[in-house]
Image 1: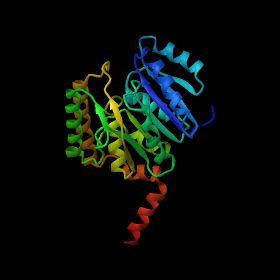
Image 2: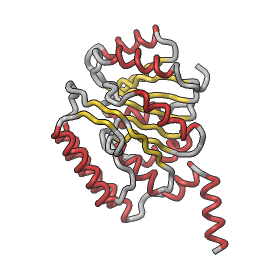
Image 3: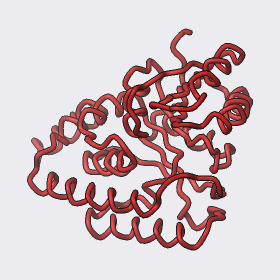
Image 4: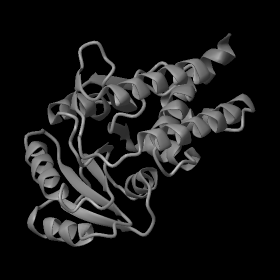
Length: 263
């Protein structure tokens, strides 16, 4: 395939049943968009028939490819798929398609135009419509409040499985993201925000997947450890955030340098 404008990555682990519907619906929706695209199924160490199902879908759906990894981890899958991509804008979404695909156009348009560097779906926007159980609602809101208090973030929803990033920003950020699992999203966003990159938030319609196998409590605990680690690294100024800004947005970095010298 020639280099597309968009590459959409769907990380999967043991999703042989959910994958055919996801590929069919995502490819059908991508055909309605005004840009060229590629859909990559990132199979991270599935032990069921996911690899076989994914290969069959790639053979019958033009524009679909499969990336096979031998270790588990959503962050790991995205690092591998995004890091190897030649697309201009890199997207990821969860295989359960909890987020309404109508939000994909407003998610990626500001990145294609160059207006923003990253874009995230937000379930906590006042205009979002969300259906999920009370436990996940409390955990999600509490986690995002913690991020505001501990790290001073400005974005509303760190963990919605519906995000996009410009390739130049990804190349600058990914080497600094240490987490290979669920904290990947938060770490990527915090580093981007601290580096001065522009994050666009899109209200989404979102329906909780009742068959989700995510261990909410275990994930929350792991995320707390990630917050503590990242906060310590930021406090010690261990991360080259100025270099990230210069690599992702060189014209903005030069403008900031020029302003500083003039003052």
